[in-house]
Image 1 (cartoon, rainbow, N blue to C red):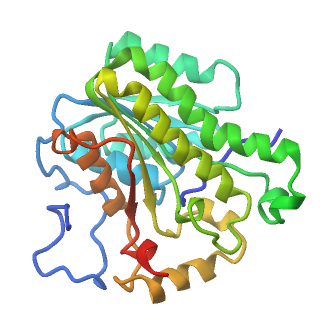
Image 2: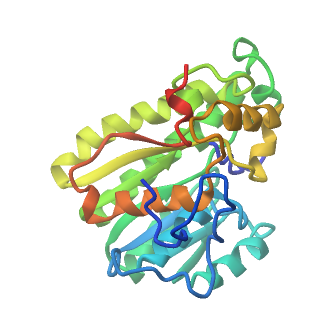
Length: 291
């Protein structure tokens, strides 16, 4: 069995940006010794799934959530991945670091049981994992295998549903469940192929879960970043073409950064977004508005 891997595709909110920041300027580091920028999320605790290395969208989210005062639990895929994730957990002072391969029976249940024993309650879960077998991902949808499609759905979509199921009894009122999507869920993006309908299913699941969990004051979102240069994104064929398209066609004429994605996630977790749920939030320098 091929182990799942993260495919991170998947208002200037950040006080860390300098006053003279321009869209084409280099973005600040995601985390440094001066990264604590407020107590907006002080007292909140949550799980971030999908950190593979320092370029992961999940790490951008974890770092910004921590910077705003939240307590963080991280996961790593397997023993091979642990040496890459453990220093990042130490860097942001994550309280908990646990193994999680969503294809392995019982591992997800063990993670949430550990969180229940150590924290009791949760305020947020960030889901930033996706996978498709390369043969199916690089081919036409009409040629994809049943096994490949089902595996992509299990890792990329149903794992978020299962996390919501396990988190629900632990979630505090006002809590947030957040996953990562991509523009290819709504429009045809060349070479995104099978992940398009998989992400479309994920976005639809967000709306239905928001409807079902709303009466318990649990909010559900999909955040849809533009193309980012992550290790996992190299699994997309001709990914450089997506990068070039994003830079030339987006109103911002630039790529976004994992820190910017993290700031939006921090906003959604916080009380300022209490009136929102079920939304797909684009963080792509406006790329999604261009025909």
